[in-house]
Image (cartoon, rainbow over all chains, first blue to last red; front, side, top):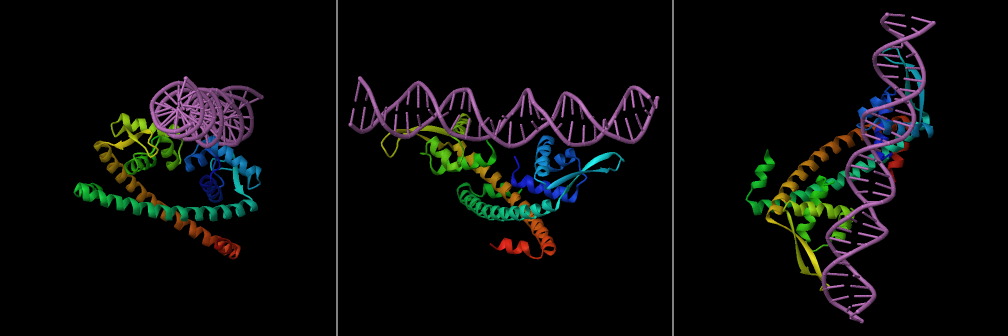
Length: 121
Length: 121
DNA sequence: ATTCGGGCGTTCAATCAATGAACGCACGAT
DNA sequence: ATCGTGCGTTCATTGATTGAACGCCCGAAT
């Protein structure tokens, strides 16, 4: 449920915008309200996030989800892990693309440049 | 069910190794037998793959799933689409990594190089 | 004082991709 | 005949995810 990407993106979003509602978080992350609710409560339970009241722009009482000190530490760890993972993915992707390009080149020979034209547009 | 990646990897695998059984295909692709069966039947139904009998290494009767001419054409199209998609992902990943590295740099300032050491190992 | 409307967090039945154990079948070996 | 093996196929189960529905709260309007 709490995959690395969601964890990272949620923590980052909370750090930058603690005033977002669960619905706004859901929309910003492209996930469902239910999932945000679940993840947020998990973070709160682990003491990484605290909910606090504040007055929003329409002067209504609302929640604010801000990172605790432990939350900031966790976010640093998660970011680093996420970065490493992305660098790994990057390398994997690089060789996969290379392989695909070799394949496309082989195809070109057989199909008389048809693919190259197609790829151009 | 038939996402672009599975479609590409299955067609590629069939082109190179038509003699693989559904179980072997599943293992090679890291997906379940049921999914391979479903995908394969979809390909057969669309006339992109044909099943044919042959004698395998143990001299047992077995199926061979080979690409039809239409299958080869489809594979070329899928490969190209997949390549484009991967190039796109590559660019996205590049900027995401850049952003993560900026973030890590900012953190370094605040945490006194702790993260850099951590990243080293 | 009362009603209303809107946005909030929360819940949970429904959905859907995916799994892999179980099945019947075909066939070579014994 | 009979086994054993590996095949394709099936389908109940799992598990993640969804989003409609709910009750609640509170400011505004009546």
